[in-house]
Length: 497
Image 1 (cartoon, rainbow, N blue to C red):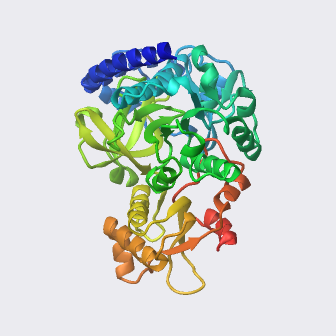
Image 2 (image 1 turned 135 degrees about the horizontal axis):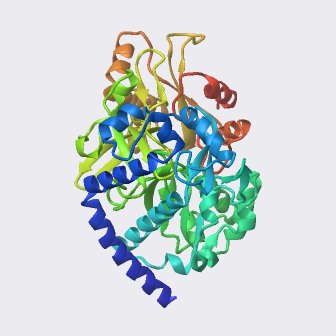
Image 3 (image 1 turned 90 degrees about the vertical axis):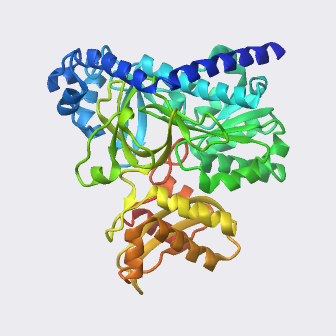
């Protein structure tokens, strides 16, 4: 055990030096990646179709390679699935990472060996940096669990496919295999309820030291553990559990709940996606994320407001400014070119480059011209929870355009783990905070075009029931926070308290 700890300590120090080095050369890193990518692009089917050549400059690339959605690249992905080579990247990808798109249905994202290596190394860097800064090297001596997708791979055409987390689970280093939970057998269970039960039975008596997964599913796991053990919090069940790794959703609404469940644990945020690993938290005392500028991704950015109006210039990292909301456009070593992943980010530091995730460009409410975005509703809820208490399992917001009584409004559906002490004041304060952040929403309420938002409390399990109804319960799937239709709201209306 001492020998393992010594190795981790050595690797952590080495990683710190490496990250310090590349994070100071971000613009240079991106220039090198672009030149390398263009040389490769010229050899591909996509590159030939757009007239790419290996000496092409950035301006030419932006003219020839338009912003692509998954639908735009899907004809090329179909060719890859049939076994064709050199379509989007040289050779063939090792895998397709299967992901449930919120707008495109199931997507099959090419995953090359090079990108898989970047995905794994990025996670490793984040964990080793945490170990270095916190002087904690003991996790490797206990169990580490990631609540993730099934590691059982299938085929889409001629290419192996699975959830990214499931693919990565097949590449855990041999020396970490004894530490990994859940076991391959339990992790392979497709039914989410059965899988959770299996994970609980397998982990309840183990020396768990690290856990990862999106907040709602980790909360569900802990709720079941505490119900079975009759303990006050999970740190009583797992005394050595000291780190929770999360990503994929805004963490703030869940932070108080998880802090009460694992009071002795630190929280570390990552920003991975099937398309690439973009950033991670290099300092647990700083909520911003270090942008990974030499990890197989070339970044472009477009001001979100201008993008939604059908315009906006594509700029690179050297031209970004602090405090602006940008649509994130990526090109990757898996062959995604000028690809809009749908996320918006904001820079909060330029030396090194650090970002916060502000939401999804396609997730907003503008039923009345207000254009409310994810960051605004998340911030409003977080402020209210801090003031009035309360713990949230999940929530979503949609418009009510034709209510039975009164003016149109925003319907909030919230599944509380613990309801705020003064609920009516909580609701008023929630609306006030949203109005402070969004002048268009404020004007609509002030001028009696719409009335203040309405908070609908739903029964425990309501969001899980919705996700189950659309076949997306478990794994890395999450319910959209915002929508312009009533599909989710109408379903949850059947579970009002």
